Length: 150
Image 1 (cartoon, helix red, strand yellow):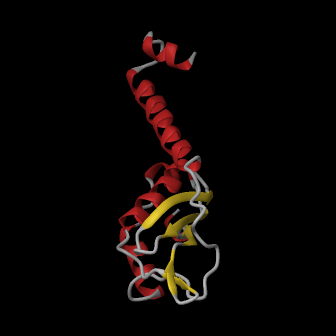
Image 2: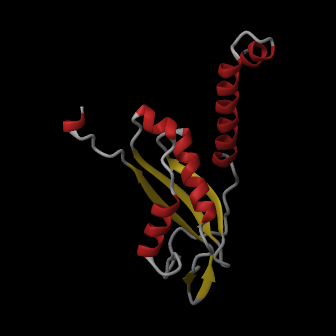
């Protein structure tokens, strides 16, 4: 019905664009949420996967690359997005899923940044490299407004 209204020009062009963008983003997130789970990946390993050069390097990578979506800023959206992904035995990131989100645009931005990460150091279990699930929380927090500038 909504698509029919769009196609018959019952909305303005600007509204049509926004609706189509929202539908497209929803489709992308639907595909990510329904991707198959790798049955070979471990949930725990003797040695968990790690970001190259450690935790501090990962925090710097996220800080340098994560952008706060403009629509989320305008809406005052804040909170923690938790993503889960598999670090393969080769150190590649696979099967990224948002397991706790705050908005479609913030969730999509977290997925984008995780996809941009370099290869990880894979996990190990029983002396062998293994694919392991990893959960990563990323916090969006708006800066406090200065009461003197109001």
